[in-house]
Length: 198
Image 1 (cartoon, rainbow, N blue to C red):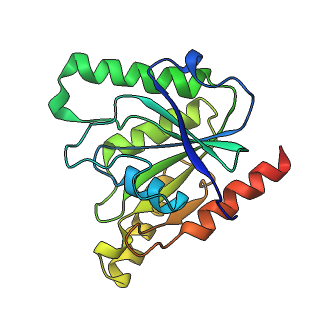
Image 2: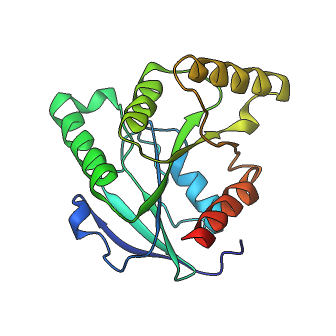
Image 3: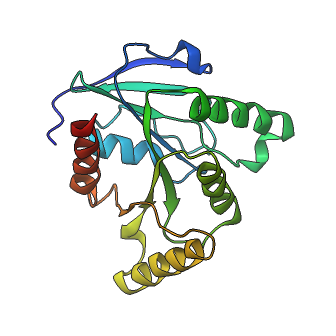
């Protein structure tokens, strides 16, 4: 897929105020500081499209970007940022869950996971929740350039094995690096394939 245009459309906290033109939406989510904004900028070839922040947990809104006038890339708030406090975390959780469960045009969710770490409880629980609610999703490992290829392979294998303890079938898995632009083509081709079936 060749991305010719990527434009910011709207930010809000209520999925009912999101665009209602029926175009498919591909949403990106992950724990705070997983590299979501960098990945979105890399995918769209627009350096400042999604604002990267040195402060984890900065995205509090649902951000819609229209790609090639055909589909939306949706930047969701990061989950599990401990320093926000219980009330703040609950608010974010409600925004995320309402969007995921209530948004009919959400075609697939990309769950971003930092490949440098072993499987984290919060990510596994979130994926289990997606499975329970029949939400189509894919796993996107980020920051692949930060570790060697041997360790990378070991970590992906460890994650697969951990998931297979409770999943009969694994979701699609992508390995990416925003720095090296790795995984970009695979992700965009995956989105294009789904768009063709709609």
